[in-house]
Length: 288
Image (tube, rainbow, N blue to C red; front, side):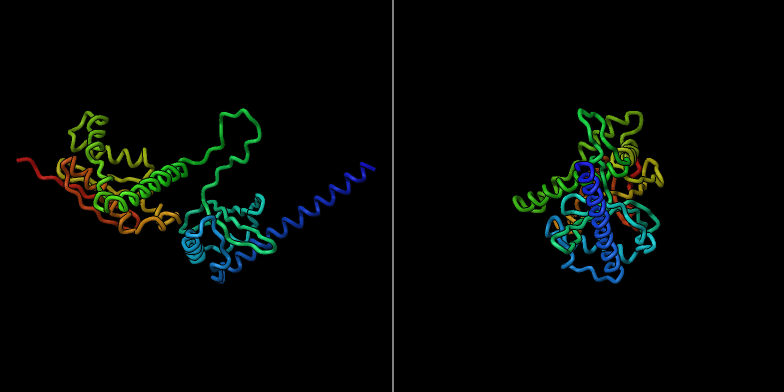
């Protein structure tokens, strides 16, 4: 009798799991259909924080404009954690493919778009302890996480200083040029100091920050450096920074930092921008 009870329970569990999986797929297919028709609205959304609703819906709008819809019809991987359902699949935008996690909150008999993410750390795969090694992610993702944590904290400080002491004081907080130049002087000892500064900034941005860097030209009296900084991509692609600071102030932080660094290394600096590339043009007067 116990055997038949077990078999019956197993069949019932399997049937329930199949129905649950089908329900989850229905949610995904309904979401994709609405997204294709540009009908996802605030009523379909319950984000983790209310002030993230508009940025997240904005990201969905951008995705809809750039989507290769054949990719969206492939059944995603599905992970259900209590009342949240996660759909995971690779998608291509602007000829770059990445894995995205779409999270939905299920309440009673309806769903809400909950979150969108392109970083997924599989710590759920840890099933025994003690453990000293943990699932890793690519270096590019880790660089992104480091920069997101760093600049979120710096923007929080900027807002605090602005409220407490004024915006000029807040921008001054980012003037780290004296220490930055000392790093170049100390760690690149076998070059004239002004040249060491240029090469150090290229190394620091590329190897410590993970930003693509190209040294376009370089001499005693001028240098041109192209940087594709994560700094600006963070503002475009993370919902919370757009809620914390105006882009004008965010860009001024970037320019304040680099102008101060150039000043202490005795370079003049002009900064321009071209399609995601920050162009740093350094010049200095020739010695007579």
